[in-house]
Image (cartoon, rainbow, N blue to C red):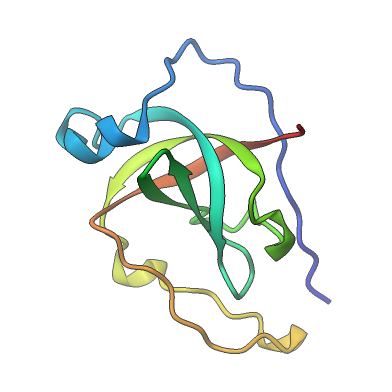
Length: 127
Protein backbone atom coordinates (compact mmCIF):
# COMPACT_ATOMS: atom_id res chain seq x y z
CA UNK A 1 0.00 0.00 0.00
CA UNK A 2 1.22 3.50 -0.83
CA UNK A 3 1.61 5.96 2.04
CA UNK A 4 1.62 9.71 1.77
CA UNK A 5 4.61 11.19 3.54
CA UNK A 6 5.03 14.85 4.14
CA UNK A 7 8.40 16.37 4.87
CA UNK A 8 8.57 19.09 7.47
CA UNK A 9 11.97 20.68 7.81
CA UNK A 10 13.52 23.73 9.35
CA UNK A 11 15.37 25.77 6.77
CA UNK A 12 18.96 26.02 7.93
CA UNK A 13 20.68 27.46 4.86
CA UNK A 14 21.54 31.12 4.85
CA UNK A 15 19.29 31.89 1.90
CA UNK A 16 16.92 34.79 1.49
CA UNK A 17 13.22 34.65 0.89
CA UNK A 18 12.35 35.49 -2.73
CA UNK A 19 8.98 36.91 -3.71
CA UNK A 20 7.16 34.78 -6.27
CA UNK A 21 6.53 37.91 -8.35
CA UNK A 22 10.28 38.44 -8.64
CA UNK A 23 10.89 34.80 -9.63
CA UNK A 24 8.31 35.19 -12.38
CA UNK A 25 9.76 38.49 -13.61
CA UNK A 26 13.45 37.49 -13.43
CA UNK A 27 13.64 33.68 -13.63
CA UNK A 28 17.07 33.73 -15.31
CA UNK A 29 18.51 35.29 -12.13
CA UNK A 30 17.49 32.20 -10.13
CA UNK A 31 17.54 29.35 -12.66
CA UNK A 32 19.14 26.22 -11.14
CA UNK A 33 19.70 28.03 -7.83
CA UNK A 34 18.24 27.42 -4.39
CA UNK A 35 15.27 29.67 -3.62
CA UNK A 36 13.02 30.12 -0.62
CA UNK A 37 9.38 31.09 -1.20
CA UNK A 38 6.25 31.23 0.89
CA UNK A 39 2.59 31.56 0.13
CA UNK A 40 -0.79 29.87 0.14
CA UNK A 41 -1.45 26.47 -1.42
CA UNK A 42 -4.10 27.01 -4.10
CA UNK A 43 -3.93 23.65 -5.93
CA UNK A 44 -2.65 20.18 -5.07
CA UNK A 45 -1.82 17.29 -7.41
CA UNK A 46 -4.92 15.13 -7.82
CA UNK A 47 -2.75 12.01 -7.85
CA UNK A 48 0.02 11.43 -5.35
CA UNK A 49 0.28 15.05 -4.16
CA UNK A 50 3.71 15.55 -5.73
CA UNK A 51 3.07 19.16 -6.81
CA UNK A 52 1.37 22.21 -5.41
CA UNK A 53 0.57 25.65 -6.73
CA UNK A 54 1.68 28.42 -4.38
CA UNK A 55 0.12 31.88 -4.48
CA UNK A 56 1.64 35.05 -3.09
CA UNK A 57 -0.60 38.03 -3.77
CA UNK A 58 -1.70 37.62 -7.39
CA UNK A 59 1.37 35.62 -8.40
CA UNK A 60 1.51 31.83 -8.58
CA UNK A 61 4.19 29.21 -9.14
CA UNK A 62 4.24 25.42 -9.24
CA UNK A 63 6.43 23.54 -6.77
CA UNK A 64 7.03 19.86 -7.51
CA UNK A 65 8.74 16.99 -5.69
CA UNK A 66 10.58 15.21 -8.50
CA UNK A 67 11.68 12.31 -6.28
CA UNK A 68 8.23 12.01 -4.62
CA UNK A 69 9.75 12.24 -1.13
CA UNK A 70 7.58 15.21 -0.19
CA UNK A 71 3.88 14.79 -0.93
CA UNK A 72 0.91 16.96 -0.01
CA UNK A 73 -2.59 15.74 0.91
CA UNK A 74 -5.45 17.39 -0.96
CA UNK A 75 -6.80 18.86 2.28
CA UNK A 76 -3.78 21.21 2.44
CA UNK A 77 -5.59 23.64 0.11
CA UNK A 78 -5.57 27.09 1.67
CA UNK A 79 -2.70 26.34 4.06
CA UNK A 80 0.37 28.53 4.24
CA UNK A 81 3.62 26.89 3.11
CA UNK A 82 7.32 27.69 3.01
CA UNK A 83 9.34 25.95 0.30
CA UNK A 84 13.06 25.54 -0.19
CA UNK A 85 13.91 24.30 -3.65
CA UNK A 86 15.69 24.82 -6.91
CA UNK A 87 14.16 26.92 -9.66
CA UNK A 88 14.05 24.74 -12.77
CA UNK A 89 13.08 25.40 -16.35
CA UNK A 90 10.30 23.17 -17.73
CA UNK A 91 9.44 19.70 -16.55
CA UNK A 92 11.35 17.15 -18.60
CA UNK A 93 9.73 14.15 -20.27
CA UNK A 94 11.08 11.78 -17.62
CA UNK A 95 9.41 13.86 -14.90
CA UNK A 96 5.83 13.15 -15.91
CA UNK A 97 3.06 12.71 -13.38
CA UNK A 98 3.42 9.52 -11.46
CA UNK A 99 0.28 7.43 -10.96
CA UNK A 100 0.07 4.88 -8.14
CA UNK A 101 -2.27 2.40 -9.83
CA UNK A 102 -2.04 -0.10 -6.96
CA UNK A 103 -3.75 2.46 -4.70
CA UNK A 104 -6.56 3.03 -7.20
CA UNK A 105 -5.17 6.35 -8.37
CA UNK A 106 -6.36 7.43 -11.80
CA UNK A 107 -4.37 9.14 -14.53
CA UNK A 108 -4.54 12.90 -14.35
CA UNK A 109 -3.08 15.97 -15.99
CA UNK A 110 -0.20 17.82 -14.38
CA UNK A 111 0.75 21.40 -15.13
CA UNK A 112 3.64 22.04 -17.51
CA UNK A 113 4.95 25.43 -16.37
CA UNK A 114 7.75 27.35 -18.03
CA UNK A 115 9.52 27.47 -14.64
CA UNK A 116 8.84 25.56 -11.44
CA UNK A 117 10.47 24.98 -8.07
CA UNK A 118 11.91 21.51 -7.46
CA UNK A 119 10.99 20.97 -3.81
CA UNK A 120 13.81 20.02 -1.46
CA UNK A 121 12.14 20.98 1.82
CA UNK A 122 8.65 22.12 2.80
CA UNK A 123 7.13 23.48 5.96
CA UNK A 124 3.41 23.97 6.54
CA UNK A 125 2.73 27.04 8.64
CA UNK A 126 0.11 26.52 11.33
CA UNK A 127 -1.97 29.61 11.90
